[in-house]
Length: 441
Image (tube, rainbow, N blue to C red):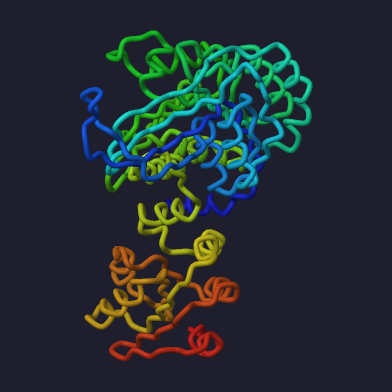
């Protein structure tokens, strides 16, 4: 896991193209006080309404949460729903120049009616039709501009008709010629339309359906059939709370999800797709990208509905899942700085090798509102003492090297500093005093 922390420091701003079926998710919240006199059905009194980007839009928002610049490639109708979608994208600084208008098409709207956070009904307002020849021709003519400066293409297929075989074939062909990896979240029972993609990411049910095999068949056989059919370099099968399995050539690697509380697996697939795309765009190897994607999935399944996981949440979980990741050296310092941007942190300097009630109490109090970093002043710190500190949830990070601590504190000053010297606790008012006296081991 320490190696994974070092990998995070390789993350940079990337340019992603999300191609797929964009739609709007509407949430209608209300209350029910009576039954209709017209029919034996409840009457919903509307309290509030919310609109969110759905379908490929949720993948797009997940990529933005990780720090990507995103361009949308899709189709909208000439309707109010498309205006809601485009306005929400523009407010988030999404490039919407390649959301093409097809007047005969209806922008999909999924309206969920909820009472006390329980879904009562979902109404889908959509029209599944093929692209017009004029629309596809317009896209083909714009491929050079669409793919300019793009690092990765993420395809999110919801089977609404936009991602035709001809469009996918041309898009993947152009991408491969430009060495742009294509990551696909597929739909349907024919994966041959994604031929030559870099990576295809079906869920377990989709994989068995596309392979036309029974659920009692070995998953490795399913993967082999799909890889032969699609000629994709990698196949990544998501298995909800059981994790993901990665297949390529004759290799199978399984990655388990470590989650605190599984609430809803709905948004996990989009989070995984976004992290895979973000990682591959940053030239991170696919096995490591799967591990990173699994960690982000562990956060997504603890949330209800399709919500986005940001980089701060992700890095915190990475640290939580392995205590050794709490020890940051020069390789991981960029990760620490990313977490602490706009976040107050407390610094506890220890000139002691022993556990005490005072130490536990101090750690508990300092960690209540802020991130807690512990700096071990002495070089000859007992290994067992460090292990105990690492096991404490209240301790976010431990820094052993004074130069690393300087680099963090120069850019992000601690909100408060305490020095614990055996049984004596001292508050250090100014960082320059701390720097002058305490950083000298």
